[in-house]
Amino acid sequence: MAAPAESHVGARFIETFGLCLDELCQVFMAPEGQPFIVAGSGTLAMEMSLVNLLEPGDKVLVAISGVFGERFVEIARRWGCQVDTVRAPVGQAPDAAAVEKALKSGGHKVLCVTHVDTSTGVAVDVKAMAEIAGRAGALCVVDGVCAAAGVECRQAEWGIDVYLTASQKAISTPTGLALLVVSPKAMAASQSRKTPVPSYYSDWGMWLPIMSAYRARKAAYFGTPAVNLVAALSESLKQILTEGLPARFQRHLKIGAAFKAGVAALGLRDVAQAAVSAPTLTSVYYPDGVGPSLVGKIAAEGVIVAGGLHPEIRDRYFRVGHMGTVSSGDIVATLAAIEKGLALLGHKFEAGAGVAAAQRILTAA
Ligand SMILES: *Cc1c(COP(=O)(O)O)cnc(C)c1O
Image 1 (cartoon, rainbow, N blue to C red):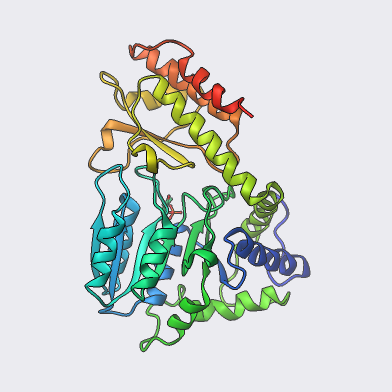
Image 2 (spheres, rainbow, N blue to C red):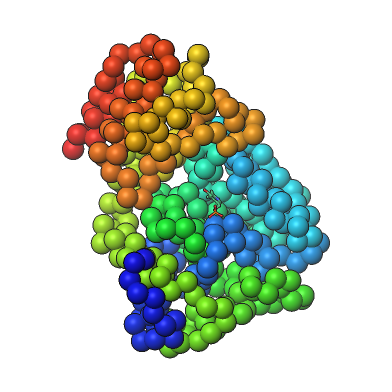
């Protein structure tokens, strides 16, 4: 990020951008997929997916496990689509049978799923969802913003048509890039639509020649790429592939399990049901007698956690991200800070119990 800005059509950047596009397909395990790296945030990647695949009046089904599923609904409505939903209770994943039944009613062009919803910490079995979509003849769009490069996703093998993320979550680059990989089937669907894509900047057709050119290590122009962010992304992708995807997914499972064991040992309850609680993020209910002021007490110990986001339970819980570059040491330090905050607010627990429970997992072979 701190390197001098360089020309977006210069030899060095052509190589950097081309490599990022190739490596994004490796990270998503979609060798035949079409990658797009565009300046914007994760929300742009969500909007790009829907605006290219759906036309006004088309039917879309959204399987909702939190706030970000609701965002898919709003985006699709803005672009004039007919939206059906299968909404899970807070802390649960959408019921696969209900999704299958809703798709059977017919005519849905796309099923939208959130891999890990950041408002609840619920991880959805996206492999099963993609299979259900495939059987119903619908394309499957997965929001992987809180999961990609932290939770296993084999895009091509699992039949996911669009997998999307933003630079700043488990990819561990600063904010500012929308990242998505589109299956050949979804590219063909977008190319055979009857009406033009109603958004100029989001139109895959405008970006496709650019992405193809850089992958062939040639320059091309549509909208100027975010040169320094792409350089940073290149470094992150190198780190991800050097660690290796299986090892990285395993590391997230381990530090996630350690954190969850730690908060449980302090008498705190996970918002997500145990079977669907995500490796990348945990949502934790405040214990009785403790409220949102805990977040500030934890911050005073030098650790940043997030407050509640889901409107049904907003003031009753807080969220802790443990993805990307987060280490075992970060988990221990975070639990120690949570213990300090809880003690200051009068919650009764055995000092060190959270740290010890996490350490038992972190130090196991
Ligand atoms: C953060 C997030 C988004 C939105 O990404 P922005 O970069 O904030 O636009 C969408 N979906 C999920 C699951 C997220 O965690």
